[in-house]
Image 1: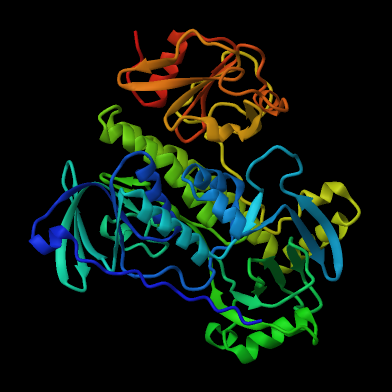
Image 2: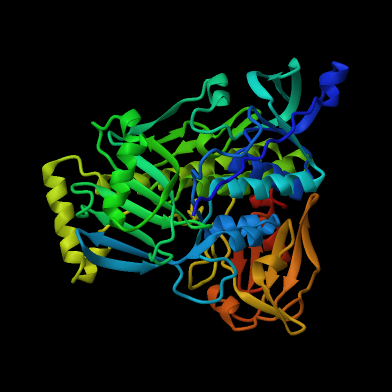
Length: 540
C-alpha cells in the first residue's frame, strides 16, 4: 500500500555570464519556480519571450500542498500544452457533499452541463503538477531554468532591474527589463521593493494529512461540520491520484502545532474518522494557520508580483494556485506587447487594476468561507448550525452554507480595457469575462473552440465570411476566425453560450477574455476597441 514518491534533483549549472564574469540583460527574469513561476516561464515561452527562471532550491515542492485545480487554470495550462497530461494524471470530480454531524445536508455539481473539454476540477499532488511544468519549460527552448540561484538583493533603474544572486559558485548579478516575482507568501522580493502586504490572520489552526489508503469513498469533495469523529470542528476529505487522500482537520487556535504533527497524535484522529478496520499510511503531515492578505500594488516599477507573493487566501475554495495562474495569464500578453514596443508601459498598470479586483473578490469569498467554517462567537455558531439544519430540507438555506465556495474566474467587468456593449446581448459573455469553451467541428473532426483561437487577439465572426482577414491598430492585429468557415458550431452550444445571432462579432484578448462584442462587423469600431484593449491612442 505504501506509495513512495521520489523527489527529483535538478542539476545546478553555472551560467555563461557567471563563468565569464559579465552582467547580461534579460527581457524577463522570474523569481520562484513553484507552480506560478513555472507557469509564468511557460507563458513567456509560448509568446516568444526568453525567460530566466530562478529558484533557490533544486526539486519540486515537498508534500502535495496545493491539491485542487479548477477548470479555468486547466484551460490556461491546456493552451500551454500541459493541461491534457494533468487531467490524465489527476482525479477529475464535479460533485461535492456537505455533512452536519452524520447527516448529508446537501450536495452540489460544479459542472452540471455537457460540452466542456476540461473538467470542473482535478485533484493532483503539487509535486506532479510541477514535474509537468518543469518538463515543458525544459522542452520550450526559451526558458533558462536556474536551480540553486537565490535572490539576495534587487535594485531598480528607470529601464531595468538589477538582481544579485547567490549560487554554489558565489555571488553574481543579472539585469532584467522586467522581473516577475512568484516567490510565495513570504516573498523576499516583496520586502526588497518595500511593498505593503496587509490583511487578516485567522486565529485557527488546521492539520493536513496526506494518507495512502484504499478506501470506498467516491471521488467527491466531502466536508463535515461537527462530525462525531471530530466534535466541535470541521473536516475535509479529497481523493488524489495513486490512492492518496487529503484530509484536513480543524484544530482550533490553542492547538500546539509541534504536538499535533506527531504520528502518535495524527493516526488516532484518522483512525476515528475511517473506522478501526481501515489500514492507511501517512505520506505527509503539516499544520498551518492561514491569512487573507494582498499586496498594495501588483506593479512596483519593473517588478510585477503574481501568486502568493501578491495575495494570500485560505485554502477553502481552492483559490490560491488557481488565482495565481490567472495572474500570469493576465500579465504576460501585456508584457509581450510592451517588450515588442507595440503598447505603452502604462498597459501594465491594467495588470494591477484587473488582478487586484480579482484578488479582492477572492479575499471576500475566502473570508466569508472562513467565518462560516470557524465561527468566532457562540451566537455565530448557533446561527451557522441552524442554517445547516435547515439546509437538509430547505433549498433557500443551502445558498447560505459556505464550506469553501470553490474557485471561479472573476470577470473584469469594470476594466478600463473593455469596450461596453452598445447593443443588447443575453448570457454571461459580457466584456471582461473569460471565454466559455464549446465543442466545434472541422471536416468531421470534433475539436474545442478555445483550442482554435490564435495566440494573439482574435475576432470571432459568427458568419461564413468576414469583410477582412484581420483588423489592425498600429502593429497590433486581431485575426479573424469565422464560425462556419474555419469550423462549425457542432452542437449549437457555441452560439448559445455567446448569444450569437448571424453576423455577431466578438473581439477576444490574447488571454481569452472578451474585450468587446457587436451584432455586425464594423472595422472602425473594432479598431477603437482594439486600441482600448492595448491602452493605445484610439484612431481618429
